[in-house]
Image (cartoon, rainbow, N blue to C red):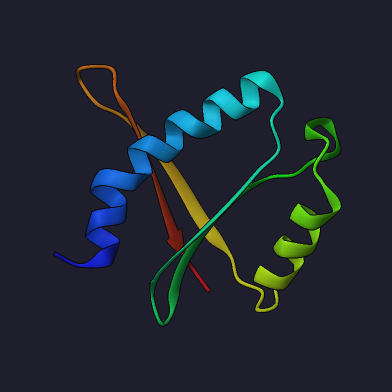
Length: 90
């Protein structure tokens, strides 16, 4: 099983839950996953409303050295579960 498949099937649903909890409680968060040489997934909730630490902001700036764009799609399954899919597009 590829790292991307593991992320999509196992980590992504957990991250969706974590993101919602962090948003609800205004908790600053930064997570970065390296799936292969050219594919990383970074989640950052570091807007002023989340009161991020200087270290979190510095870490994000290090992770963002190579600019890129991501497409995020949300799918609601028949049972009501939601799946977020993030893909690098540039």
